[in-house]
Length: 379
Ligand SMILES: *Cc1c(COP(=O)(O)O)cnc(C)c1O
Image (cartoon, rainbow, N blue to C red):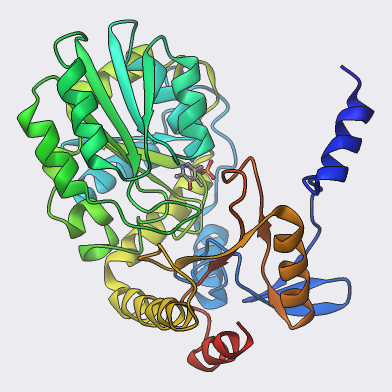
């Protein structure tokens, strides 16, 4: 493969990626002498830029000491007390029997799906699921069919037509989609799962944990169907301002994963200091209703404004796409918004389907009402 030729082709298509360098100052991004409001952050509750909260945590570390590596896999000497406590706290928070922690959301999805499936498994995945879920499916022995985005009619026909031919059908979806910001009807999926025994529900709540539902436990909680989700997945890198991920599930499922997930067996566990921080954040998240309500309020304002100017908006959350069509238009929109002081980025294929390049607005609770009004007038 000629690496240079491939790069030249990406450049000519407008799809060349580079690693953007940016400094951060609270909710602002500093880049090439410009200070822009960060509208591309996953710090949905503003915890990552909460200086007071962070300095309190650091004082505790200075006082009590901190451990910066696990030095080993969890199955050898790396199973810290912090990890064990975090898992029981996560289980309680999400209302499941048990939980298991991962190094990242990407790891979670590529680890679980190959472990829980074999050649007698059918995976039915929403067309727009995250790359990490697709990679997990690719690494598995299962057969996979992707159903049209949020088309639960098609999904049910696929379940009904295949349920007798496979030992297990795993329905894989997200509760809030990363690029469209739309919210999945988990209750309807739970209903399909109930009517077709042998069906398992796997929901990635990466963009919902911390932000939605009672105590921030996610969309499954919001829709009262925690019990129907077999693998309830969340990540710590977004609203929870940390690193890592978790699945909440039955104790049997957890014990199975511990025995069968090769990456868990063969990788060094997350450092206890990071887990301690995740636990600190988790201890506050249930009490952040004010921030969740405010985020819902400003998100509704921006969505309504887009609808009012005739921009169809699939979003039901704080992730709000502004469709551009081709990559060049998206890039030029992003650059004019950056000139106007808003740090927005173009999302291009293959992250989103061809012809649906867009700006992706990601609102956080740190953005003020006035800044939201300014953004709306600019749009
Ligand atoms: C961000 C994201 C991930 C990956 O999580 P990381 O912790 O960043 O690796 C997985 N699934 C979905 C749906 C995501 O949006």
